[in-house]
Amino acid sequence: MERPQPDSMPQDLSEALKEATKEVHIQAENAEFMKNFQKGQVSREGFKLVMASLYHIYTALEEEIERNKQNPVYAPLYFPEELHRRAALEQDMAFWYGPHWQEIIPCTPATQHYVKRLHEVGRTHPELLVAHAYTRYLGD
Image 1 (cartoon, rainbow, N blue to C red):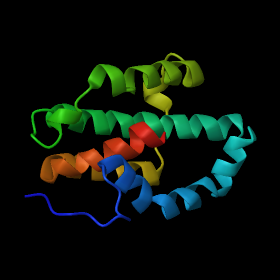
Image 2: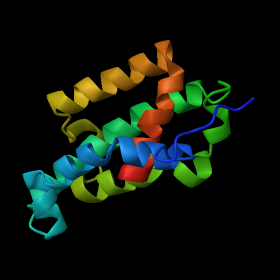
Image 3: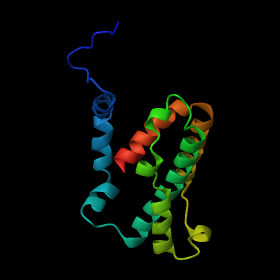
Image 4: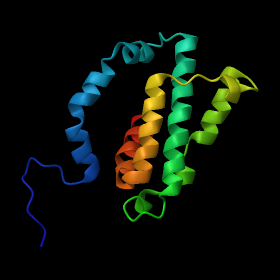
């Protein structure tokens, strides 16, 4: 028997996540970089660094998604053709950093920390990949 839900509680996962993360979204949108990004006032080097970070993040996330695509928690969300971004980001890296991009793209300590966490989650708690995928694929 389904438990009744209070009228104030969202009825589906996306609504619940939106409500639960509202304050964090407001903070993120008001971060200095994001305000400048939305105004088109980010330097070329700053933009390249963000794109390089996204490349590293999506590489790790998609490696872990592939590793866990049969996991019953993640399997219903496995849509690599529609969602995976690594191939497109590789094209972006070649554009921004040139033909030897793999040898020279930066990886900040914060990005390294996030990549490490994605691999840890994929190995030890693959059900948490759902939250990371939601954040990345719908947030970026």
